[in-house]
Length: 204
Image (cartoon, rainbow, N blue to C red; front, side, top):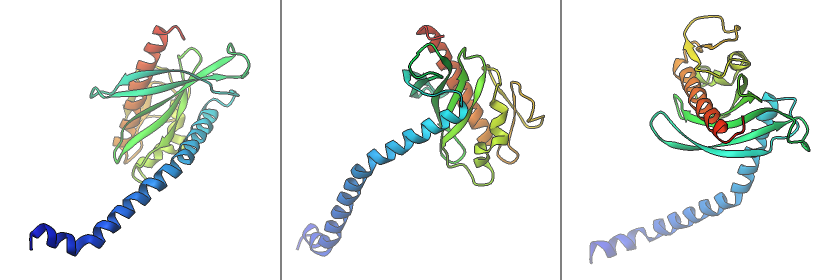
């Protein structure tokens, strides 16, 4: 008896089970994908609303492609924050997605700026798997507050300082310098390229 035939005879049940299991995963994924995407969109809208509370709608304005420090291209969607959803001239700010590597996994952010793209309105975390109790403090108000009204310029991470002072210096989270640095790199890299391309498109 050939080895192949012997293998098939001995493992047919395992092969069938693996096939069925894979098929079930594919079917479940297809069934849940719309709901997962809908939840993601809702969370994105909720986060944008939290960053720009005076806005009543966030129509998509445009999409741009930016490059990471390593040259990887990422698509960024830019949303226009309107105080009056029926009047395109009531822009009070802009919001856009941003992502980059963190300490444990990819970090996805939502960043908001004022209508002239001069100051940050802040950022919120869309997805993150940073270390509980340390890196995941990037989600906490005390850390995120440092970005609110900070100038849209090259922000600098410092290990010590006054985390209540609003300027271009961001005080790192104690014990989570890598996560703090990851966020500031994402913000700096994305904001600079988005602002440049929005100017080129005549949006600013």
